[in-house]
Length: 102
Image (tube, rainbow, N blue to C red; front, top):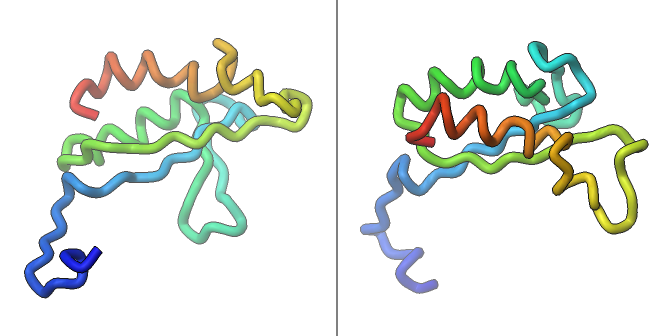
């Protein structure tokens, strides 16, 4: 902890994680604004690739995916998160194939 406060601490783009919200609440090719997060959007599965491609080409290496689903898919155990139909599970194979550096 003490080393974090030193004046010689360097931060590089390799240490950054870009948060991305992927949803099944909009069509796969579209996105919607997130009212409580200025300038942030929820992306459909296919729209996510269009959003991330230019960023990966500029050197983005790491993202964290947050899946956003409708209330009908939610339950106390969160089973839908591991379902093949969840937005995160649907976009992972596509991201791995199209953006292998990510």
